[in-house]
Amino acid sequence: MKQTKWIVSIILLLSMGLLFACNSNSDKDTGETSNSDLENLNETGMPIVEEEISFNIFAPSNPDNTDWNEILIWDEYKDMTHIDVDWQQIPNESLDEKRNLALGGADLPDAFYAAQFSSMDLLKHGEQGVFIELNDLIDEYAPNLTKLMEENPEIRKAITFPNGKIYSFPGVGDPDFLSMHIGARPWFNEEWLDELDMSLPETTDEFYEYLQAVKENDLNGNGEDDEIPYGGSDIDGLIRWLRGSFGLAKQNNELIDLDPEDKDLRFIPTSDAYKEMLEYINKLYEEELISQNITSINDEQFHADGAEGLYGSTVWFDPAETFGEAGAAFTGGTALEGPHGDRSFSRGDLAGRLDGLVITSEANNPEALVRWMDFFYSDEGAKFQYMGIENETFVETSDGEYEYVDDITDSPNGLTVDQEIRKRLAWVGILPPGLMKQEYFSGSESSENSLEATEKLEPYLSEEIWPDFLYTEEENKVLLSTGVDIEKFVEEARDKFIVGDKPFSEWDDYVETLEKLGLEEYMDIQKEAYERYQDN
Image (cartoon, rainbow, N blue to C red; front, side):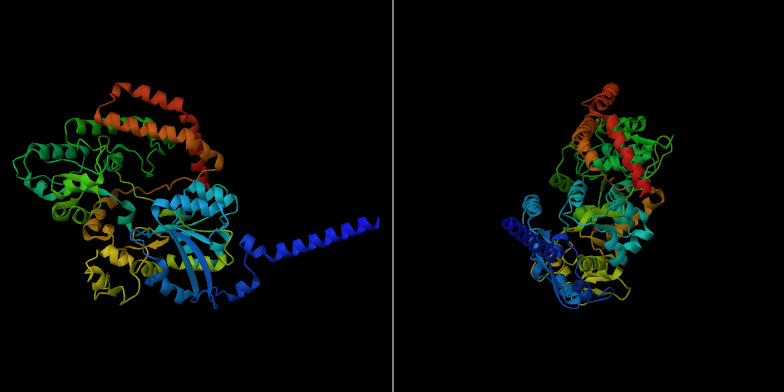
C-alpha cells in the first residue's frame, strides 16, 4: 500500500514537471507572444521593436540567385525596424521540394515569403495550425492593409477562406493602376493602318476587314506573303480580348460568369455565345488571318516574328519594349463591339497574389512580423519596395516623377536594368506581397504606350471583377478530380474547334461529354463558392 502511494506521488510530480515544461515552451509551440515580447513592440512608427529580434523566412531565389541577406533594401529595412531577417532562399527548380520538406520537418521557418502556395495549400496548412490565422492580427497591427481593404472590400473577399479566416498577406495592385490590372491588351500596327487608309477597328467586323487587308497586301514591302494579320504568344490572349464582344466573362473568370439574361451563374463553355465566339475565331483561322501555329507557338518564335515586323495585330504587353524597333509601329486597340452590341474588356482583381506572406506557428513574435509586412501596404512602403532609397537607387525629377539612378539604367558593368535592380532591390521576378503603385513601378505596364492604350480600354472595363474563388477542403477534392477533367477537356476541345479538327456539328456531343464528366456537381460547387464570396 505504501509502495502504491509512492508510485502515485512520483507520477504526479512527473506530470507536474511535464506540465511546467510544456507551459514554459507554449509561446514557441503555439506562436503566441509573451508579455516581454509585446513590451518590446512599438505599435506605431519605426523602429518596430526597441531591442533587435530576428526571423527566419523561406523565400524563392530571384533569377540571378542574389543573396537577400546582403542586399541594400533588406539591410536598410533591418536598420529601420530593428528586425533582422535570415533569408532562406531556394532556387525555383527545387522550390516545391524544399517547401514541402520545410512544412513536414523540424525546421519550420517563421514565415514563407512569395513561396508559391496554392489556395488549397493555404487552407490545408491553416486548418492544421501550421499557418496562423491573421484576422485579428491584421485588424490590430496592420493599419495600412486594413485601410486598403476598407476602401476596396474585394481585397478582403479575395483573401478570406470559406471558414472565415485569413492565412496570408496578398500582393495588391493600386486600384488606380489600371494598366497593371488590364495586363496584356490589343495592339495594332499603326503604320499598316495608315497605309491601308483604315481607322482603328471598333467592331468585330472591322477587325475582320483589317485582317483581310493585311493578308492581301505586301505591307512590309519585301515581296513575300509573310505578313501575319494576327499573331500571339497563345490563343488565350485573343479569346480574352474577344470574349467581351460576345457578352462573355465580364467578371474575368474564364469558365463561369453571370448569364446576362437571368443573372444566374453560367458555365461559359457550353453557352451559345461561347460557341458563336469560337465560330468567329475559327473563321479567322480558316482564312489564315491568324498565325497558323497559334495553339502551339513558343515564346521564342512569337518574339522573333514580332521583331521581324510580321504582325498586323497582337494581344500582349507594350510591343515597343518586346519587339524592339519593330514594336514602335504599334498603337493600342480598344474593346470591339460584337454582333449583338456587346462591348467590354475585363481587368484583373486587385489582390493579384494570394500567398504573399504566411506566418507559421513557429514565429514567437507574430505581431512584430505583421507590422514588418504592413509597412509595404503604405505609399512610403510601396516606394521603398519598388524604388529603394533616394539618391542611392532613385532620384526624383523636377516634374515629380521617380527614376532609377544612372548606375542602374546605364550599368557600368554591362548588366541589364533588371540585373542592376536585383543587386539592390528584391521585387524583380518575385511579385512580392505589398502594394504596387503606378508611379513607383518601372515595368512595361507603366510605359507611355501602355498608359495610352489603357485609356482606350478604360470606358469598356467591367465593373464587377471576381478573384479566384476559395473552396472548402471537400470542394477542392472534387475540383482536383472532376474539375481538372472538365477544364482539360474544355481547353482541348476549344483548340480543336478553332483549328477545324472538331466540326461544330459535334457541339451537342461536346456538351453531353461535359455533362457526363460531372458538370452539374462542378457548377454546384461554383455556386456555393460564389454565394460565400458575396457574403464575405
